[in-house]
Image (tube, rainbow, N blue to C red; front, side):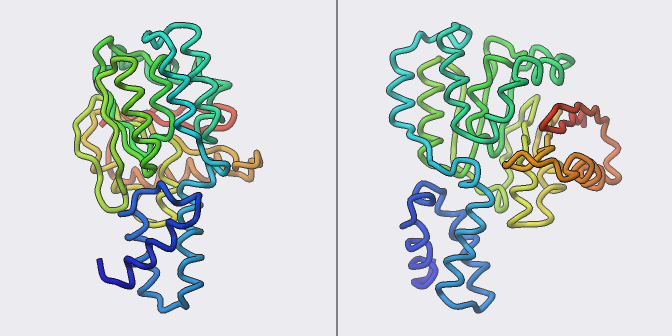
Length: 267
């Protein structure tokens, strides 16, 4: 990393909302901004705007993972225990992407994934706090769960979650615009992820669908904005998804929920 790029990354990270974001993602965005020849101030503003669109908009207050970990340590180690499930529900409420799904969590995974039950392995990209929904998924008792996201503190928390509940899981930081994970899995989860990544790379959607080494993909799109407005999003993203599938010949099932449009791809 050259000196100017390194300085730019460090200045972006000085903002509290961006402190724990994977440095490689910040570097990638900063490198692209430097090519545009803007002023230093405008470049920093543009980088932070991109990072807001792909991450911090979904957790504007930040998430206190130390507190969540402290609460988790005192819980039983069974993910199906009622007290544990209440903790998962409360914790997933900290992130907009999973919070929007809580009202339908009892039916979302069972309805979509019943044909794959019991699921033996999952690869969840841009996972957020979705790994905590494992207790609602039709999985085998020995399911393997590989997940990645851009927040370093979140990844540390998820690895602690796997350890505490004896889940065969691994979490790591990733910049999906630079590298698509290559861990093979029965099911890949790409939940409300593509619109965020397209803020950085408009061609990333088809690449992710093609390159993820999963037999099946559960892909979803938001049917409303973070503020709750519909704005024709369901139709727009349904049409966009069909464009991403052009000439693949994959088998696709569609599932509509109040605030989320989901598709199950069988390659």
